[in-house]
Image (cartoon, rainbow, N blue to C red):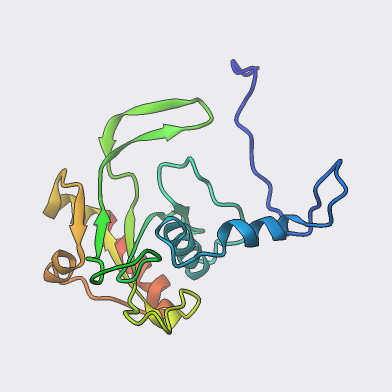
Length: 200
């Protein structure tokens, strides 16, 4: 018997047709999604959108995003993937294009089933995927256009060996390390290749 009176709640995948209960309104869950998540250019939505793209590439976008996991994606091959996203264009007024910057901060893993933090602080994934929305023209920027994205998969082992407890990483630093970008159709194979590097 569990020691928790209220154990963790497992999310179930919705299809968007679900309706609100006990109110005379016609809107569905899909209407909420459109209201809440249409601004996929925004800084706040970009990260989750990039996680979905990587999940599509890894053939594991059929479930439900796990907000509390120590890493963003668990592939069918049991590869733990951390996804970070950045872009040159933002939704706010800009005097210049944004610098591409990613977090590589170490963390304590959180187990939401036990509500406990792991004592060890480290990078939790096997592979990081740094995603860049590369468009620099406001008139054509569209995150749904996968030609506008470039992906930089990197074995976590490489980050640990080169950057220790460093908290952030610029695109320039990543490229100086010799990490080359790939397009969406190449992403799965590159993640698998970096995973092999990670496990040695």
